[in-house]
Amino acid sequence: MNSLATERLRNCQTLLSPPGIALKILDLCREEIPELQGIAAVIGHDPALAAHVLRLVNSPFYGLRNEVETISHAMTLLGANSVRTLALSFSLVQGLRRNDAAAADLPNYWQRSLVSAVACQALGDWLHMPNGEGLFLVGLLPDVGMLALREPFGETYTELVRQAEGSHERLIELERSEFGCEHGEVSGWLAQEWNFPEIYQCCLRFSHQPDHPEAPVQLLDFIKLVTLSGAVADIWVVEDSPAAAQRAKTGAQALSGINEQDFMTVLSKIAETQEDVSQVLKVKLGNPVGLELN
Image 1 (cartoon, rainbow, N blue to C red):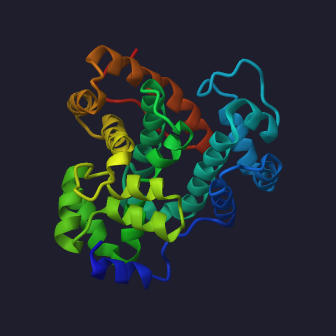
Image 2: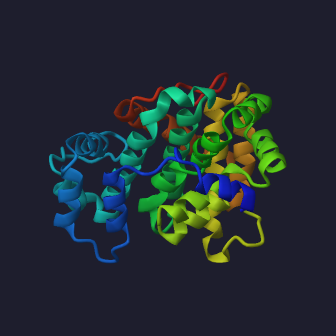
């Protein structure tokens, strides 16, 4: 990443950082053999976080037949990795949204991030991707670098967002011109600073440039999935939803040969299940304009 941008970010006194509960869960994510009681204890120490996790686990998002009343029971049914990464996702959202009032200059930030997370999980499940328990989290964070860049660069970054006029691609071009890097690279840098597992660091760093020569070959399927999830999220946030949907269809075909009918089926699934996430995290996601998904 550009050394000037890195220096400004490192020296920024207000740079965002994960809340304490997220750091504890991150430590658990690095354990190859997770200790179930330890995970349940850490998550249970934050009653609001535990309630968020259980509410989503019991929603149609997961489609479980019987109600789950405890974090331990959730881990038994879904696996420890799924529950701890879900808890990490929610704790990060809670922590990063503490400064939501200052995020007014980043329109649709949380809407795009959460739809991307749901899309990454849904598409990964459809494609039977391995290690799918982390897909929601990795789909959530590709744009977190936007929040980071806004801190040291203030009005300069706000002006770039304004000039981009809602176009993610245009914003990336402007960032590269101004800073010598784009926010996906910053997201990967943050993941490294926060000591995330390497798979997250790489998927975030190359999320907007999957064809980068330094992108690890063994992670290309995951990286391209994250890129596609962002394209799907654009369907919900740009003015021309049908055009965004067409771009996402093309990306889905290129990723793994998903045909149009299957893609629309997955898109409908995303539309149905994202409401659960919206209600739990209190972020209005809305519906694509001019696009029928039912």
